[in-house]
Image (cartoon, rainbow, N blue to C red):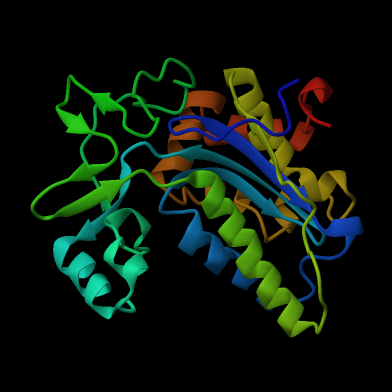
Length: 264
C-alpha cells in the first residue's frame, strides 16, 4: 500500500483525503459544501486537474493530477510597485521578487509529457527548483526576464491554504475555535492503472459505502453526475480510457467492487 503522506510532485496523480478532527462534521448546510468548492476552485484548480471527488459530512476524497505547466508570474511593474510601497527600511532594501506574493498565474508551453490519463508513470520533466528542460529551452523555475519573474507553485501549500481558509470560514460561521481537519492531511500517489480505475469507483461510491444512499446517482456532492453528463474533457477521457464507454462506467459503479488492499 502506498504511503499516506507521499511527497506531492508535478505530473503525478494523488489520492487526497481527510476528515474532521475527532470525526467532527465539516459540512452542516448546503452553503458549506458550496463554500468549500469555491475555495477549491480558487486554490487547487489552478495547479491541478481533478479526476474525481466527493464531499461527505465529515470527510472528503479527491483524485487529482498536479499540473506541470503552471508558473507564478510576477511582472516587473508589479515588483517595482511592491518595492515602492514597502516600508522604507533595511529589510525593504533586500526585498526581492521571490518573496513578493502576487496572485497572478501564467502557463508556459512544455512538452506533452502526459498526453492521456493512462500515462501514469515515466515523467521526464524536471520539477525541482532550478531544474531545466534543455530540449524545450524553457527554464522551469526561477526565471528572470525583462518582462517578469516566474517560479514553480508549491502544491502542498495550496492544499494547506484550502483547508486553512475553509476552517476559518467554518469556525466563524459556527462560532467554534481550533483545528477543524486532522493533520497532516492524507495523500497517496496513484502509481498504477488499476489503482486509478478503482479509486474513481471508490470515491463515487463513498456515500453508498457509508450508508447515506443506495446508489451514487442519489448523492449530489460528488463528480459522478458530472461524469454521466460528460461534464468535461477529463471525465470523458477517463471513461473512454478506463471503462470503455459510459454503460460500463455505470455498471462498474453499480457493483462497487474494489480491491480492499488499496484502501484503508
